[in-house]
Length: 252
Image (tube, rainbow, N blue to C red; front, side):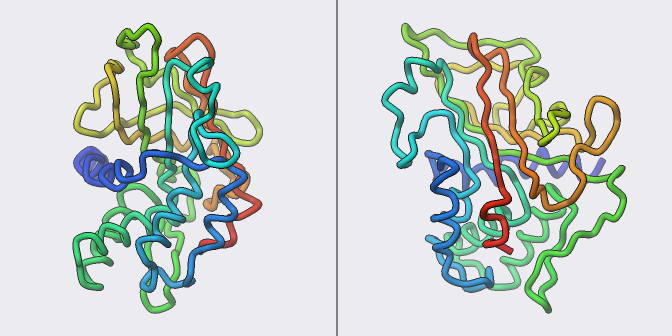
């Protein structure tokens, strides 16, 4: 219960880093961005390093292969979506960026990093060896994967988009097409129903288990990749895909 309450309370604060990065990154640019990170130690990361890590994991349905707005995106989508998975590596970048912008000292940085890792993952940060450590050996009690989501209404002619119990239509799928549902939603304007007038920013957590009660991911690194399927926002589903094997080893 304590962790759940902190999820709701912290969702708004962690979204602030998301709002500073308004566009996502197509998969084929992710490797290039992540390889630009100058130091293996998060303590030495710059703002640019942090943004490269975050952008490398960001997915959208409106950018082309060069990272620009796709000319045809508005023809096929009533909603633009940008999504960042709150993986441990991404959380390191979010926390470090926040520490730099707020001019926090090292202890204060580790404080917010520890908080974010505790709320959104089963990892903790080992300061002595400068590494992430998995703390939950039991997959049955694992914390589900969370995402920062930004929605933009692009309807033409314009009309607000309303979906009752809207988050029930979103699914997280693994590489074998098993899926999990949203179990928590956080953010300033988060509600069970979705009302999209212009923009909506929320943090969602998916169940760690599929619809049969089996853990969705066989390992804690998510190396096999995953996708989110967004239904009910428009006629066709919106699918965002993460294929992580090709570059996951570049950010520890």
